[in-house]
Structures are given as structure tokens and as C-alpha cells.
Amino acid sequence: MPKQLENGRDDSIRQPALEANPRCRFCDAPLEHIFVDLGMSPLSNAYLKLSELARMERFYPLVVFVCGQCFLVQLEEFESPDGIFTDYSYFSSYSESWVEHARVYTNMIVDRLKLGRSHRVVELASNDGYLLQHFVAKGIPVLGIEPAANVAQAAIKNNIPTKIEFFGESMARRLVDDGSGADLIVGNNVLAHVPALNDFVKGLKILLKRQGVITLEFPHLMRLMDENQFDTIYHEHFSYFSFHTVRQIMAAHGLSVFDVDELSTHGGSLRIYLRHQEDSSKPTEKRVDDLAARETAAAVADLETYVCFGEKVKQTKRKFLDFLITAKNEGRSVVGYGAPAKGNTLLNFCGVRTDFIDYTVDRSPHKQGHFLPGTHIPIHHPDRIMETRPDYVLILPWNLTDEITAQMSYIRTWNGRFVVPIPEVKIL
Ligand SMILES: [Zn+2]
Image (tube, rainbow, N blue to C red):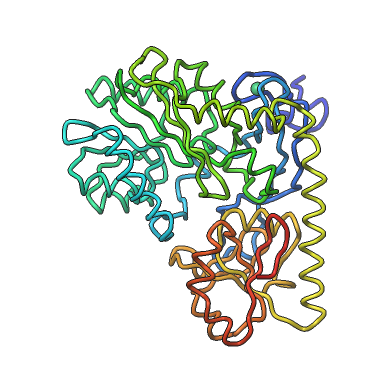
């Protein structure tokens, strides 16, 4: 008798991930330790249309593990990357400070590597061309690789050559066979989003020319822990890296970190500079050893450092709810500013809906008129704040606080106050 008839149900519909113990995305050790459990949450970029509000919404567990062997902090993959990234609502060009960050980076790296018309720059997750446009303006040949079709089309429209594809070993081989090796590979905020981490890093090794350089930017796990940035955890963000762990991963694939910058972007990021292990033309900078020493002092290779993070997160939730409950009891109005992925983690974890926050606003026309996933808070044009004069404006993309408080300083004219939720709730 077929198995599914014996017990009255069809086993084939169960997800394999639920049956097997999850394993580390890098070193394949079984994942036995929880870093933090943020409950059930929808995908943080699954913004809803009005017509979708009455339908069932998919929620997935947001449970983060830490590998006891390599200390890679990671999520299981619950949704196929296609489902997550083919219609991605984040257009990098809508953030002024991010476009400026890209311009400053371009000038620095072109100067440092003496890049010119004979070189080629490849950017992975090139989004709408916010970065490559600066290389194009200098006459340097570029190629963007971007799996989200809608943002990639925006780049192509602006004459930035872009392939709509996921990057990995097989794509890297095809590019090299076509004579498209890279002198510089740029990956800003892509490493964390890669489900097949080893395949991606193998691709980097293959695509890089013999004396080429790779720069990768990603949020620094040590800062996430120090500054309690648990809202930067979401399903689309599979891995969270310390410098210690990322160096191990790169070394396993024949790449060496020879320099590192600590950046203020996304609440504290690292930019690592990689070369082939065989390339002796680039000495390792002192900054590499300095950061490694600081991480050792912060016990990043000690499991205990990771397993106590969850309690800190629960405390932050209680303080945030305390602020909201008090504000509402006093009859004050609270609205949001921004509709970033991190806001969705925070609001879903804390169970905050339109009972506390009337609406949020976002500058991106692709988000306006939509609703936040899970919490169904409406997203309006920023002018709405001027019209409704709320008492509190909660800044969800707290990493852009300076930019936003400068743009929105007019809320002071009616004694409006800004509030940031992280590292813990604070009225500015
Ligand atoms: Zn591991």
C-alpha cells in the first residue's frame, strides 16, 4: 500500500527542511544553537496592494542559528530565491546618501587601483545601476549582474549593461569563457542575500583576473550584536558575518582579505578587499590584524557571545511597546517614516499595527499606495506628514536618521518629535 494512504496523508507535501536538521551554509556542521527567535513573519519585501489585504498571507519562522563550528550566523532558506528577488521593490537610487556613498567609493577605488578604459568592473546585485553609473561616467567598461528583473530593467534603460541572472560558479565560467574576466568585482550588500554561499564565492574566484581585486560590503555582525540591530534580520538576509568568519569562508575558496574598511552604512558595515591567495603584489594592511584582534577581544569565536543575544532583543521589544502604549494613552499620534525591510521585522516581531502607527511614508513611488507585509500599515507619500501633523515620527530606517531629520525638520513647527527604535527606543 502506498505510504500516504497508510497514515491518511501525503508525506510528499512536507518540506524537506522540516525533516532534516539544518546544516551550516558554509561548513555543513549541524546547526544546534539559536541566536535569536523572532517568531513568525512574512517576507519583509512582500508589500501588499489594497486588493491583497483580505487574502491569506504567508508567514515563515524567523529563527536565526549560529554555527558552533565556524560561527556563521544564519537563517534557513524558506523561499526559493526566485520568489524573493524577481520583483524586488528596493531601488537603490531613491536613497540620496546611498548614491553618494557609491560616488565616493568609485572615486576612491578608481584612484587606488588606477582603473581605466582597458579594465572591466563587474558589480554583483547591481540593482538599478546606482553604482555603475559612476564608472560609466569615467569611461570604464562595466557589467551589472542583477537577478531582480524590474530593477535590472531600470539600469538597462539608463545604458548600463546588465545581465538578469543569479551569480555563481556556472555564470562566472561563462563570463570568463566569453573573455569577460573582472579587474574589479564589487558586491555591496549581496553576500548576506546569497543562499548558496560556497557556489557564490567559487564564482568570485573564477571571475577575478589574476591581479584583480574584489570589494565586498556587508553589515558587520559584531556591530549588529553590540548595537542590538536585530531588525536587520529578515528572511531574505540569509547570513550574518563577523570578520573572523568571512575570512575563513574566503580562504576556503583561495581568496585572501588584504584590507578592510569599517563603514557607517547600514548601522556599521565592513568593506573587505580580496585578492587571489597566489597574488603577492598586494601586502596585507595593518587594519586587517587590528580588526581581527578587536574581534578576538569581543569573543566572536565563543558560542556564549551569541546565545545570550535573544534576551537583549526581548528587552528592547518591551521598551518599544512601553513607549507606544504610553504615547497612545496620552492621546498622541504616531506615524512611521520609511518602509524598509528592517521596519517590517521590528513591527511584526513587536506586533505593532495600525492600532499604534497610523501610517508610514516612503519616497519610493514603488511603495506608495501599498501596505506593509504582516502589519498592513499603509504607505503614503511623505507629504502626508505635513498634512496630518503627527506628534511622533518613528524613523524605521534608523541608519538614515541624520538624512531624514534634516529633510523633515519642519515637524518641529508643530512640536512633532522624531523617535528611533534601535538600539533602544529614543525620542530625539
Ligand atoms: Zn559553520
